[in-house]
Image (cartoon, rainbow, N blue to C red; front, top):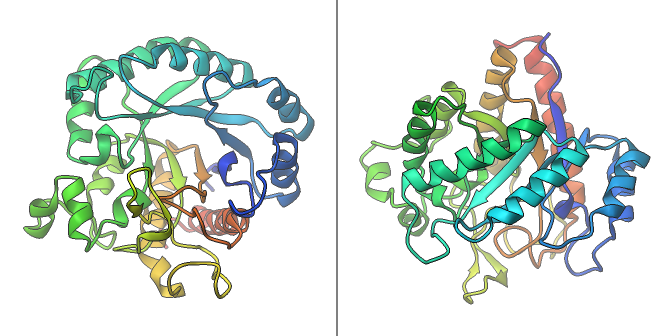
Length: 331
């Protein structure tokens, strides 16, 4: 049987919902430990955040911060990247999860070479302490144009460095059948004429290629459905409804979510994740997956179902699915 995969949780998702007071770090660690289904924690420290309480909690509950990261702007946040790597070194973090805005601090769009340069600098800083960068494929970032992934990978690999990305299928699958979201990625025509595929039923899906090339070293698990409904219960900063990148994994009680819920709508996302896990049984390259049901406008903001319950249920499903595939990888 293949080596077990580690399953963690983003601390932002350790709460009931955003209509209640946010649990403090000690409460969050206690919730994670008591659930008994998580191997580690993922955390994005804020600039200037006091991390002292977190170090004690890690030791008390034997829950490592295996993944640490942030949302960064090239030309402005390099110092913070170094600070997070230093914190990761103290935590023993193995992954530096990187969300990188599409524009430089001076306003110009980042070129592929500039994205690669940011990644290579993070490698120089992170490799000596074993906290390796992974570029997350994410909306509102340089990578929302999914066609850029392969181009940046080529630049990085030509420099003789391993290219690592974080795959969160929800940021791709929610766009299926949604013309506005396909336009946001600049891929509408290519999807419609079959040049670029998002459908998890197809072996030609663009993210399947990333997996097969060995670029996926970290993953986030948050279910969506194709053409996922926008979040009309919480607006983004620009006044528009949230982009709807979260579909409850657990059936929400009546009145706790803004749309109808059907179990069958989970299947496309599950299919994509099963394929990722199946690949892992053969390669061992993906060492961990973080469950990431979270609040905020684009996700579960304004909803009243339990965010943490969804993370726990997703972890249980991931582990059961992994164990079945690891025992019989041809399933």
